[in-house]
View 1: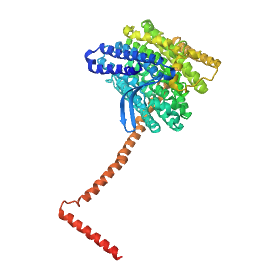
View 2: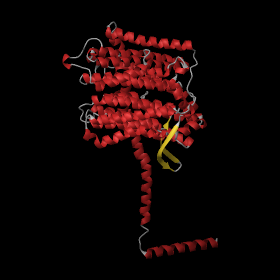
View 3: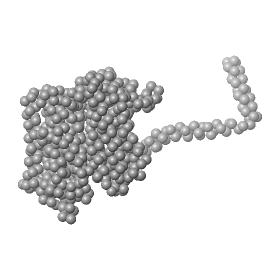
View 4: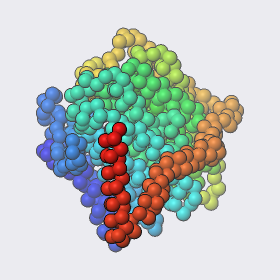
Length: 625
């Protein structure tokens, strides 16, 4: 069964190829159903791989399927192979599962679009690239998938490129991610220099042979890569603008797949993090929690419904990085899974609202939509309660586990994390109240209505998952740590274990619930009862994301551009000048010497005679001396 793991990647690749050939011919909606069928096949294959692994002993749950020799170059050889283990199969399950639901939703959302077939072609290629990323058995193959999702994100974010803002958003995402890719490439080079291999199995087996300084360099370079892909400070700036793409793109890329790639990469190399200096994971934890707090603050004052969810995604990714830095790898993957469900639900719910409101995204023009969109409102509320950390919804369990590990690692990290949790409950309540409650602030002529079953059924499926997914790793007993036990072979004993007692953990959980309640109660007072002025909680600095994006723009357009031009001038005049100068000097010398080559035999005979005479005179003089 495990030998057929290649089918997971083969289905979306086949869908991509068929859509290139037949997409325009079969048109809407068959192109969408073909792409969805390809994702369904990948999901079914992932389920088969899961049960195949489950049937093996825990110590034997690691299998490599070698497809062919990819790069033969002297001592450097790389196979195209798939690593099937609990971590990669877990990633494949929710990438294909949530991806299938989003594909089906997109059939309804993209109805009537002139490039309907092209959109699904890109979606299948994106899914294939993401699966190569998570299933690749070496860093080079992971990097191939990494670049693939980057290219596809550019194509999908700027899908409606006739709007200049959309085209600019795609370019911004592409360029920002190149910074992270630089870190990934250097990490690959460093691994090969240190170990002579980039295969994960070699990395796992020989990580202990790395010096702490070498391991630290590799971890920091991979963290740079993760910061670009998973939108951490200061490289988060591409993700809010990426909301320019169609909403299914936002749900697929910015909830369940691409943005989680950085977190996956760091969890995958946990044996290297274990060898690195302690300040490296500490840096990851603090950047993560700082990003979470920063993005939560920015989300409080956004009026574009998708921008709120974008900053929310950045914040939740910060929580995952906090977990990685705290050594809580299971908690990081746990939150990644629950986040995939509730954030995909929230994005698709927002897409339904935007569709019903004739593509207007400003929440100040919404209100009371629960009366006319009951299914969207009901499922969206489930997603809200999950992300706000209200038990028993999924987000409470995963976020609480991260906060518990943060407390164990450093109470300061926990304080920042719990403040972020309060802000999360507040800004998500603000979004829900402004959109679905209160009085209608739209024109009666707009006539919003519930979407078709093609768009509401995926919402119901995701709402169910967001409600119950937390039960895969309950904290009450080790017997209930299903996810933790499943992932154990992929963590090599590097998972941090809570040292605080049961009383402390219960107290932390109660404080987490109280924080969520506080955020919701304040939002009720501000946006439903108008007992507090909204301006107090929507500072202009937050609305402009604390000016970070603007500072980046000013730097790149001002001193940054001049610096880049200076570097280019140095390269052109000094580096290239030195190389060209050597060439010119050789050419000038050759031009002078060429005159001695007349082509006349008599000239060469005269020169030979002169040379012989000179040698004779030299020998006579030497003899006389």
